[in-house]
Length: 209
Ligand SMILES: Nc1nc2c(ncn2[C@@H]2O[C@H](COP(=O)(O)OP(=O)(O)O)[C@@H](O)[C@H]2O)c(=O)[nH]1
Ligand SMILES: Nc1ncnc2c1ncn2[C@@H]1O[C@H](COP(=O)(O)OP(=O)(O)O)[C@@H](O)[C@H]1O
Image (cartoon, rainbow, N blue to C red; front, side, top):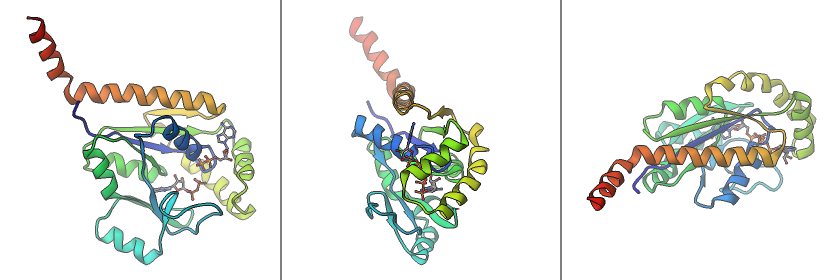
């Protein structure tokens, strides 16, 4: 069936688990595409350029924005982050679904973008703020100062929860992953209904006549 790809927005305060969940979803369904963002923040140990992020200089980032090559962009924790437009448009044309790991500003801009696709937005909450801090520490990739900054910003990110179609409390990882799979399956069926089931039903009736 002909259809355009879904745009799946995942947001959460830093450390709630969205990268882990996105990775699990892609292991479940390898047709899913991850939108690799460009950022001016330095790579963490183990992060690979072009896989986790495109690590670029602020000037190069601003050039991309000026050339309208970013579908959305925002400043988060003092660094610039943006979703390159071209790979998303290509995936949509090919009918492949794209996952975005973006903050609330990115979520708002993707919803408002003129891409015209079927957008599904999901907000991931931690079970508590002390658990969020524990996860940031357990990840072992940020300094105390960076963790303190992220905890301070977490309330502002969480305040946007009601803008999202779905809100999941990521307590048990397997449970949250199962909920995400269910959301994706249901939203794909909704998309297909819109995209071309009319023609299928018409043919079904004709074949039976
Ligand atoms: N608007 C926007 N936000 C992004 C983008 N890429 C990442 N972010 C957000 O930036 C924040 C920080 O990301 P990151 O530095 O990887 O830290 P982490 O969330 O702790 O793994 C998170 O809220 C991400 O969702 C992007 O392309 N656009
Ligand atoms: N449900 C969960 N229970 C316990 N730990 C979790 C859970 N979800 C994620 N984590 C852990 O918390 C840390 C932060 O997760 P991560 O996916 O990097 O968050 P984010 O991308 O939202 O910043 C990681 O070490 C991850 O393994």
